[in-house]
Every structure is written in C-alpha cells, then in structure tokens.
Image (tube, rainbow over all chains, first blue to last red):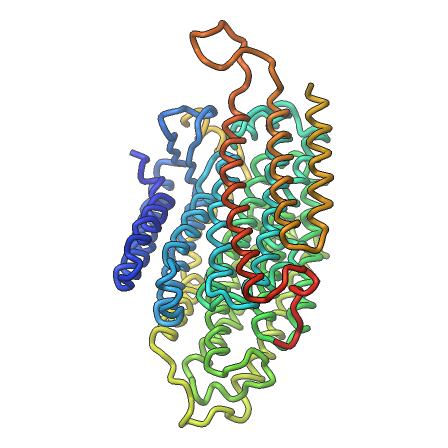
Length: 493
Length: 112
C-alpha cells in the first residue's frame, strides 16, 4: 500500500479546492489549511521511517509500470524536504492567522497557500521529469497570485517582473526537456539515468545539462538572483516567509537531483561550473547583504548566500559534503522562514523598513529581541544551533577534495552573514528606545508564538542532529549511488 | 520536414525575443505566449514527425508514431494558457493602479 505517497500533494490540492467554497467562513478556512499541514507532517514522519525499513518507495499512477507511466518516488532526501516544508508551512500559516488581514483571507489566500504547498511537495516527490515541470508550474502559478494578492502598487509592479522572468525560465525548462527527450527518448528519471550511463555522457548531453542548470539557477537564485530581492520583499510577511523558505529550495532540490542522478559522469566540467556559480553567488549575495539599509533587502540577500552555500556542498560532491548540504537545506528552510517573520514583525512594530529609523526595540520586546539573536548565531553557525552541523560537514568535504577556494568563500560568507545581521541587531534592538511605552504596538501572541516555535525548531535541529543522522546519511547515500534509486524504481529491488 | 519545423520554431523564437525586449507590458506578454508555442513545436519535432501510423491499436499494423510528445504539448499548452491569462489580468490591474504599461516607468525608485 504505497498510496499514502500521493497524499502530501493530493491533500493540499483537495483542501485548496474545498476552501474556495468556504470563502466567507474564515474559521473553517484556517482550520482546514492548518489541519492539512499537520497531517502532512505526520505522513512524512511515517514515510521517513518506512523508507528506512523497506527502502525507496514508489507509486505508479494508473498501474502503468515504469518507465511508461508517471510515478511518485519517495527516498529519504525528498521526504526530509517534504517534512521540513510541512513544518515551515504550518508555522507560517499560524503567523498568517493574526497578521494577514481579512481582505486577504476573503480573497482565497489559504487556497493559494495550499496550492503552493501542493506544487512544492509534488516537485520533491515526482519521479518523472515532465511531471517535475508541471509541479513547478503549479507552485509558480500559486506564487504569482500570492505576490500580487493585496494589489498594492509595488506588489503589482514587482509581480510583473517576477512572472516574466519565471515564464522565461519555464520555457528553458521545456526546451531542455525537449532536447533530452530527443536524445535519450525517455522522461522517467531513473530510466534517463540508466540510459545516460549506458550511452555515456556525450558532449551533447553535457550541453543539455547546462540548459537544465540555467533553468534551475534562475529558479533557485544561483548567480541569476537579481529578480529575487525585489519580489521577496514586497508581499506580506507570511507570504515572504513562505517564499524565502520554500521556493528557492525547490530549485536547489532540482539541481541536486539532476546533477547526482543524470549528469554525474563528467564532474570535472559540470560540478566545476556549479562550484564557480556557487562561489560568485556567495560573493554577490555577501555584497548585497551589507550594501542596503532596508532590512527586507538584507534578509533577501541572506537567502542568496544560503543558496550559494548549499551548492558548494554539491560542487564538492563527497558523501560528507552532501550530508552537509541536506542538513543545511533543512536548517535554511526553518531559519529563513524565521528571519523573514522577524523582519516583517520589526517593520510592523517600528513602522519603517529602514534600520536607521529603528532603535532600542529590545527594551519594548525583550523575547522578540532574543529570538533575533538566536537566528543570528544560528545562521552564522555557532555550535549548539542548527547551522553548525551543515557547515562543518560541507567544510569537511571541501577539505577532503582540496577545494580550498570554495571553502574560504563559504566561511567568509558566514562572517558576512553574521556582520549583516549584527548590524541590524545593534542598530534596531540596542541603543536609545525609540518607541515610548505608551504608544508601543502590543506584540500579538499570534506574532510571537510562530517565531518561538521556529526558534525551538532550529535549536532542536541543532541538538537532534545525531538522531537525524541515519536518515540524512541514507539520503546522501542514495544521491552518491544512483544505482540504489534506479534499482528501486525500475527493478523493484 | 523536421528541418523546416525547426527553422519555423527558430523564427518564432526570434519574433518572441523581439517582443520580449520591447517596453510595453502587453507586447512582453504576447512575446511569452509565442515563445511557449515555439517550445511546443520543438517538442513535437523531437518526437519525430510522421514516422508511422496513427497510434491506435487495431487500426494499422505499426510502426506507430510516438504519442508522448503530443501528450506533453497538450499539458504544456494548458499551462501556457493559464499563465498567459493570469499575466494579462496582472498587466491590466497594474495599468489600473499605476496608470502606465511602460516597463521604464514600472522600474520603481529607491525611496518608497
């Protein structure tokens, strides 16, 4: 009974459709959407444990055996990401309950969040390349609406750019699929991998791999990140947190999947290119993170640095480095969501996004200030928190293969992250109190509780790294040995 | 035949690129629509054109043409349709709010 595999995608789709009929009943909308995310957390924990016992699971839709039908494949890597997505989405929804406002809630906000999550989970689970494209589009269409929902001038302006850049990258995706289908003749991911291994990775296939890299680089903000800060800083806080945590990570997932399953035969070329791109992304993101005074921009550039850092792990490509990348992906999803929520809340209580116009917030909101402190040290990788283990493992991999330049860039970028956030912390939380106690905006419970939950999650991920180790090493093992994946999908082993 | 269709796809991409680089939002959206049709032609050509019989079992005795590219194109056309519709609505709303459909004026400024 593998039918449960489809639920992480099917439940949000169904919920999204049902919610359309409850437009005026906000309580029901909130209940159903949060309920679905919580059920998804349960399902993914169950699946993760089943994979450890039974190996990779798959579900052939309509009984069409691979390589002919569309299928969902669940290995540890994808389920770990589904689990983290569900946790982050549930907490962002909690935050949305008390911050998004009635106008959004009446205009199908929860439906579109459900569709977004459906697309994200579908992209993680699918085992068919064209289905990956379809899931990307489901996710992107929902995100187009979420960027524009609210209809402020800035939002509409940024949404046009966001839509055009994404339509263009989707076009490249289609072209890449067409080329690959023309030269390999199959779309099942395991089958593609097998055929490329048989025929050898010819220069033509390496060329196609570069088209794929362009597509996913645009989606994940690897080097081609110039669209990212604009469109991530205009939507409401809860939406921005979802975007910052999830959307770029889907692109990263796709890069890692494609370059460990299909195009792993010529690492001197492909992985070197990924390494160079990751390095430039780290530099560019670091410059952006220290260049602005608008805290939304600083936070958005921190997303870019995270992308570069995770892909250093892929470029290095050893077991340790990939484990590091997986840990860091989970960490980054949780912490970036938290960072966006904190930045959004700060702007709301201070009434400005410029950090020169905020000061002394910690006196008004002590708990809030200390959570920001936790995020800061977590992102820069101080030991008991979740950023540490990923950084150590990626660093270890880089030392093993002698990629010292990438190692240096990755760790210098951590210092830049620390500096950029420390600047916010010193300017906004310390110093003279700007808001008098009479006219301070009371911190709503609905704002602070999601932040506390995410802060607990980052501490738990840091302290519980040992407990997660078997799952993560299984995930990295599948990535290093594509045969495990192929055997499970094509030969029922 | 394949060569001809590939050249046609190339022409469509050229037209689409020209439209994408123009300054009016509507032209950019039309550009993306044409671009996606170029991709559809490309996918169809990749499957091979008219290499066999209609893929219906029992009608002819093979070889049949590859039916998969057509399924892909169908899916992709539907998606392209949705995206174009959404972006047209977005462009109209943006025009209502900002009073312009010129990309230069939609650039935005630092102090907002």
